[in-house]
Image 1 (tube, one colour):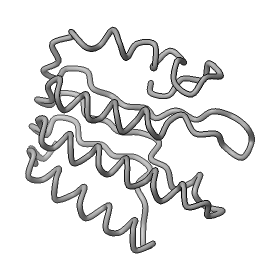
Image 2: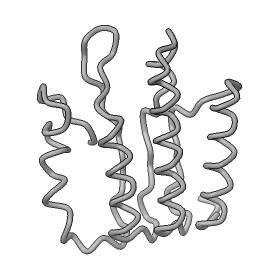
Image 3: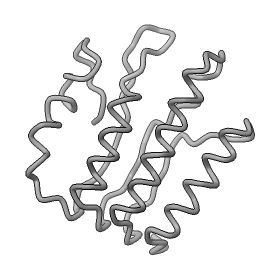
Image 4: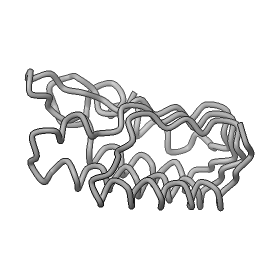
Length: 140
């Protein structure tokens, strides 16, 4: 926990997306818990998730290994707006089907943020397997 806040989350997401787009590196696990990140930073992280999806949809043989597996954002200041951006990006990309045929989810941790809970019920079906069919779940 560095308390990087929204500005740090935006800078890090931008740098990681740039490395991904240039083929230098990709993100598998992003741990930014306890960093004072709010909706603006969550939006930047959502764009990083979307960038990985775009890169993976290019059809390269390594695309499956280049998807983000875990995003840990607990104990921040993310509200409903930021959570919605994260859910939208995650449900557009996950679950994806691995070469083995298995559906692979994104582990997205948002506990201890500033969520009102009013939108959470509509996402519970997605987290339980409603996204993408097959019962594998899209976001856990």
